[in-house]
Amino acid sequence: MSLTGTYDEANIFAKIIRGEIPAVKIYEDAEVLAFMDVFPQSPGHCLVISKTAKARNLFDIAPQDLTTVMLAVHKVAGAVNDSLKPDGVVITQFNGAPAGQTVFHLHVHIIPRYEGVGLKGHGHGQMADMDDLKATASKIAAAL
Ligand code: AMP
Image (tube, rainbow, N blue to C red; front, top):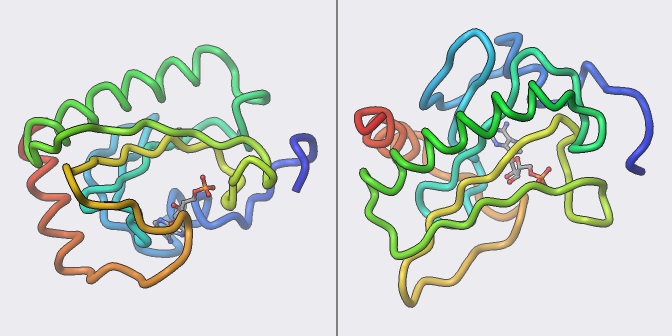
């Protein structure tokens, strides 16, 4: 998918926002949702999205909505850092399929990194164990 086009209401994150499919949630308010990535590249990999902005990428989100998302990223990444005590944290955001984007609802990845532990592939591979994800989400949420 190119950088231009219309927002697809059937994308998987829109379905999560509408409650049509489950997510392991960390934090939610009226504007943002943070939840665990089901194909984590590293233990604790989570995502932050806007619940209100129908934006596919950085180029079609309103500045105020992006600000709201990034304030949530700051909060959740801090909780990831405090709770999981990684050696580093990667914050990424992809725009367009050639850049690596696979879900076309703007989202920010928070990926903890641990010394000597490699990253798994992006957006594929084995789905995480749901109980593990729930336990990690609880730890992060407790540090918010
Ligand atoms: P991107 O490739 O930047 O669009 O990232 C999409 C991310 O969403 C990938 O890291 C996927 O592992 C993740 N993902 C896909 N489906 C789900 C889902 N149902 N729940 C949580 N994360 C998902």
